Image 1 (cartoon, rainbow, N blue to C red):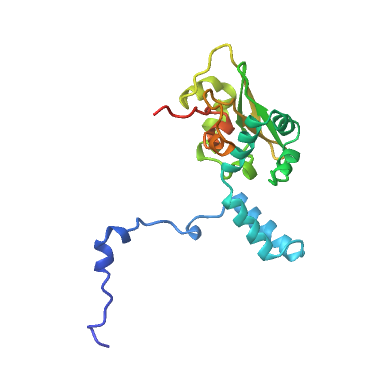
Image 2: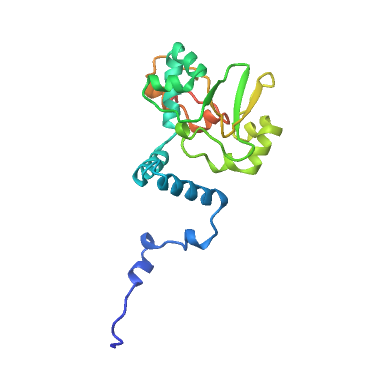
Length: 221
């Protein structure tokens, strides 16, 4: 065998665009309990012909594609239409159906912030979250620290997010469960009269709908 035969990877080693730090493969660590349950349930649904593999994959792709823009659309419509706001608070699924939006199979209660009440969402047991409206929860939402402190010292937690509320404002903390999720309907910022729904939706962030921040009005540049 000729000793001249070799693979020269020097070009890639010296090119920063091709340099990747070593990443562990999924197989390098044991599957978690939830990963094992997810795989088992998926295989059982397919085996029982309840859903097909294509349907399962399509649903996973849909879940991965969800962003907080869905929730922001609901908030903007509620800011623009008091009737819709009332229906959203009364029944988020029915309100979502009005605009062709599926809010998911788990009931979602929409909690309205007011000048005297501020709502904060947490899941103290795990990371239950309105994924159909807000997408994947942030890591801090799933952390033990947030889950514990949102209950024990919510005002301090809010302050760490830059949300300093007057002592006269009551903070209500809502603990999500597997059977019930929550989303915050923040107050409409001042100076937004005349803005379109699309423009209003651009002011609504994921963190506003969890309740750790409040939306800011349009910049005055």
